[in-house]
Amino acid sequence: MRIYFVLIAVFMGSYNLSNAQPNMPELPIQLYSDDGDGFVIIGHRGASAYHPENTMSAFRAAFEMGAEMIELDVTLSKDGIPVVIHDETLERTTNGKGKVSSFTLSKLKKLDAGSWFSNTYRGEQIPTLEEVLEFARDKISVNIEIKPEAVTDELTDGIEEKAWELVKKYQMNEYVLFSSFDYRAITHLKELDVDISAALLYEKQQSKGRSPSRLVTDYSADAFNCSYREFSKKWADEADSEGFPVFVYTINHERRMKKMIKRGVSGIFSDKPDLLKKVVDNMWKTK
Image (cartoon, rainbow, N blue to C red; front, side, top):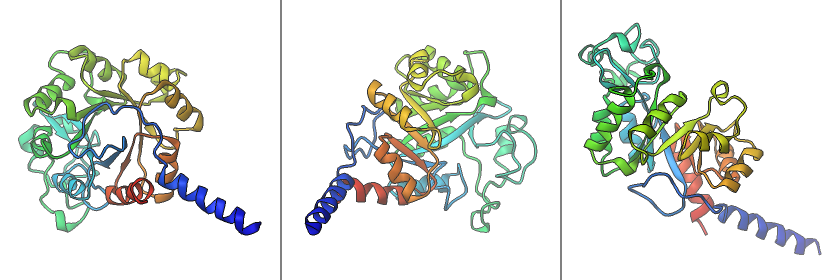
């Protein structure tokens, strides 16, 4: 009898692991390398565990590791060019000092954005959004996170419009997901074009107690992004019931990846896209 129950337990465990893929909601964008599993492997700021974040080397590595999407942060230079860098200031990831918005693109390009990570990457530059899109076209989808410091109340000639014009220039309309912690950016994007795919990045203060489904509805968002720490079982049940995709950040540990996948997320942001790919392959593709 004991052997019988052990065999059942082993079978059920194997079944749950190899069939962990739930009835996933439709993805808000297309993937160049779509394998049909309804789940997206996202390189957070590229493969930023191995390369300096938000640099071309990090984005290339994420693609080579099998990521299906790269995530990047975009803000504006002093002369209004969309540039890819996470912080409002330069100190942490370059050899410059001061606000990004205080420097023209030509001056930003003279900065070293790689040595802070390793001398191997000395001379790595801050990329423009256009440079990244030129690389990504026909290769890998992109999540463009618009930084709050670049968002204003104005729609015309704002960062949202400038970024969208570049996306259209490289014919990546269906392969780009925008997101922002500033909910005004989501509103602006939908005003520019109702068909722009945009994810609301959960920010507690602006949310004012509203649930994920209410926020998605209020802002006409196509997806909901949040920290894996915030994505509770309650939120998972709500997303499943209402049928909207959820992407969670930032997970670099196998156990947490498995937990969130089983909870039903549509994608995970990871600094280690190679590890995430391995986890996904083992859970859903290995029979």
